[in-house]
Amino acid sequence: MNAIPETVFRSREVERVVTGASVSDGAGVKLLRVLTSDLQRRLDPFLMLDEFRSDNPDDYLAGFPNHPHRGFETVTYMLAGRMRHRDNAGHEGLLTAGSVQWMTAGRGIVHSELPEQENSLMHGFQLWVNLPARDKLTAPDYRDLPAEAIPVYAADDGVTIKVIAGESDGVAGAVQREATAPLYLDLELPPGATHTVAIPPGHNAFVYIYQGQVELGRRGQRVAARQLAVLSNTPESDGVLLRSADGARLLLIAGRPLHEPIVQWGPFVMNRREEIEAALADYRDGRF
Ligand code: FE2
Image (tube, rainbow, N blue to C red):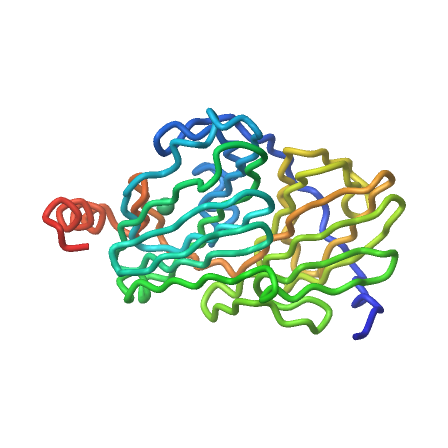
């Protein structure tokens, strides 16, 4: 394994810092909504990012009973706890610590996501990745990736990198997607670490800190836990520089923008209003 990080000559800088908002979703699950609809254009192809983290069962036990999705992909990454998935395409899976579920809703799926523990910490993330117009009505698909299936490597300065999707320092991630080319990394920086991550020019990118604090870019802008940093999308930049004085854990997510209209109604994300109406009718009439 080549432990020398790719050289980033011109780092992206922090364009904007967003602090997550506490919301309740599903049957009353408390979570932190980090990427909201006002960022969907700027962070195209990403539609949503939630962090759920609680050791109080009242915050998560009710889970997400049966609900539909159409037109995009959901990526659930668990750090702690257990969550059972069941859907109307006959898939069933148990998400455990370190595992990822990559679900393509496509033309429609009805599923439930229910915690399978009665106490202790539940911690993870759900990211929504848009599908291009031509794939929005594709057949639903579902993949469970156990922790062992997620490539992980150590870089300089003791930085640990899990490659959930895309490619980093020549290490191919567990999932590849042609249209949106998502890069999804989970990085752990020990105290004093400096690390660079290559990001394709033109792709939209953000960093979400879930533990500790990071200084981003040549300017070293400080971003703290529970904050998302939108990275500038300057054509001459080839990556981002990360530093952490006291150590940090963060997600780095980037992707190729689709530049297509986005029309969302709750769990349906299409290109046109009429397609949302069709989704509602199809769901109501049991055609999912
Ligand atoms: Fe869902």
